[in-house]
Each structure stands twice: as structure tokens, then as C-alpha cells.
Length: 188
Image (cartoon, rainbow, N blue to C red):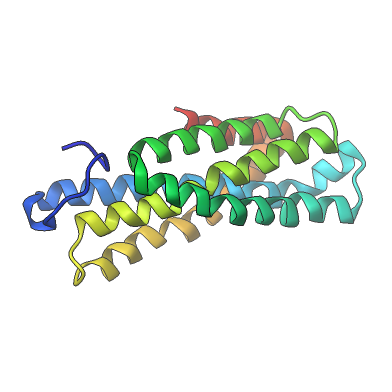
């Protein structure tokens, strides 16, 4: 049985080990989701200095541009997840948001950085709905709260790693290379 290709009619028909594997993979995807989302916040000051941005422009990059597109694209991605392979949707979206994170590091101006950041938001919008749907297929109603709690742990782990790795990589290699290096694992 391939991860997320077809709904499981009875979660009991899937081995506990495979269910844990699926949940672990989804949680790792969620960690990467939050690493790529949060890394920008620790890099705002070097980005400001390098590109000469104002507080308003930084707020646009880190807040409104991301949130507006993330929320807007979440609904169409949920509909796509209802009709097509949820696993493939997650894979395509993860590659997209990770590539856009790396492209943020190559931005020469506000417009390019804004476009790449919007790409991160759109890609990340395709993660949650299909992941929650897969969890619902692999875990019975009684087991879902625990499974969803494990999945949700990806968020604080991702925030922690995004801030830690972003700051560390920026100190070693600069903000641009930090974004490129943060984006690469999700593409792989």
C-alpha cells in the first residue's frame, strides 16, 4: 500500500509499524514546513541591511504576503486532496515551497523576495489538509487525537530548528546562503 494513494477502509488492516512510519513521515514534512516558514524571521535584520528595506516592507514580507496567500490557497489544495493523490500533492508542494525558500536567498530586491515568499506560502498551503486526511485514514477515531498530537509536534520543532539553523547558517555564510541551505533538504 502506497502512502496516501488510496483511503484505508479500516485502519486496523494496516500494520501498526506502517501507521507509525506514515505518521513519522508526515510529521517530518510538517517540521520542514515550519523550518522554511520561520527561517525568514531570524534573517530580517541582515535582509533589511542588505536590501535597504523599511519596517513596513519587512512586515509585508514576514506577515501579510505569507498569510494572505497561505490562507487563500489552503482551500483549493484541500479540494485537490479530495480528488487526487494526497501523497503526491504533499510531495509537489514540499518541493515547491522548499525551492521557493532557496530562491528567497537569490533575491536581488524586494519584489523578487516578495514573489519567492509568496511561493513559499502557496506551497505550504498544500501540506496540512492532505496530511490530516491521511492521518484520518490510518488511525481510528479513538486514536486520531494522539496521532494528530504527534503530527502537531512538528510545528514547534520546526520553529525551533528554523530559528536555530537560520541564525547559525546566516552567521557562518550570510542570510542568502542560509535560505538556500534551508531550502535544499525539502527538495531532496
